[in-house]
Image 1 (tube, rainbow, N blue to C red):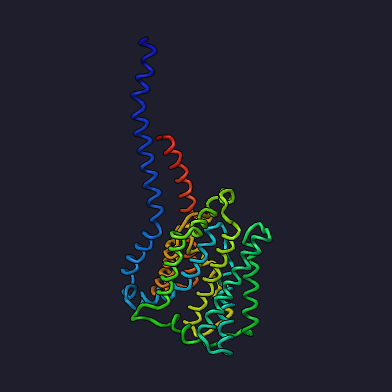
Image 2: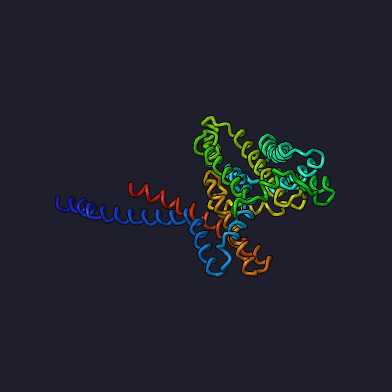
Length: 350
């Protein structure tokens, strides 16, 4: 009996120790995940603090207003791109879509002096291109949205140059110039528009069933289909909204420059994708929020503004942003690995 009782007592002595180790591991993983989740916002705050020391002009009201104005276009594109990435997709056409919408708006203004009509047509162009992307991808049974959005990138850019004759088309209605160029003190009106769009998208994500479906479709498409969620309609709507955001971005940029041009939006698709990923969203879908896109856009805007203030070569700016993108993707991979280990540790502690 003494022999048979020994293992039982020894196991009882080891159990609290094992539970303690498991609890400590769980706490460490939880802390690491929390750091990764707040990482982009924390990096942005540290960047601002460091740059305010390096340049006396960085935190001046005028420069802060410039950062918001320069970031407005990429922020709007990033919010639309966020919705697409949330559903495990990608939209490479947003920059060319922006260019086409700006050219069509400028040409329309030459024929009709109507702010409402010009803005409506620019939004319609953006939304139509987005609808084409979504419908062809979903109902054309394409293996990946990369194919159709790359095609529309080329088509939209070609149409923009064809319609404009390869030249910038000057002139925009007063309302468009107000949106893109006007400020309230040092604060740009375009930044107010960005905030309004952000609030609308957050409301959709948190208050509307359709918004929650974006996460369900991106998180597990097969489960979403079994749950009766209209997956195809959700995916198409993501591309339509991305296209509408491109139309809004075109309105902001056209108002700021008082023109439409086929040159607008060059590499904007890469900036929008970078902003979403840098902000902490995931290419795997089902994860992220509008705040991630805005943080990422601000990080890119702050980086470019600061490097200009410090007289850093423009080509080096591209290198810096590329490195930041790689680090952001690696942090996403690390977060996924830690989350998997966290779930295992939770199961062990249970």
